[in-house]
Amino acid sequence: MYNKRTPVEELPHAETKVWTCSDAGCKGWTRDNFTFEEAPTCHLCRSAMVSSVKMLPLIPNSNKEMKSRNQGVLINEG
Image 1 (cartoon, helix red, strand yellow):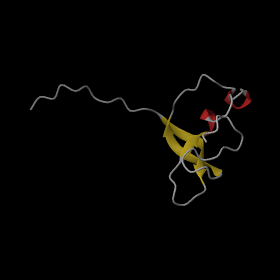
Image 2 (tube, rainbow, N blue to C red):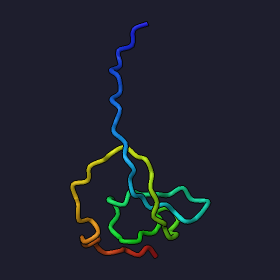
Image 3 (cartoon, rainbow, N blue to C red):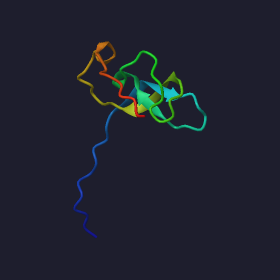
């Protein structure tokens, strides 16, 4: 059988600093270089996050100074 799909290129992986949710029931995590805060909170459950390392595909981030940028204004619902 002929398959028209082109082979998927394998992305390079590297150990990447991430923040993982401290709540055992939550699977939230984010890359450190994509966070605005020095110690972020989980975007899913609002629990504290802990620093760790994961083996992830490399994703370039052109915004090197994200933690020093102004995040904007929080709009309260209610």
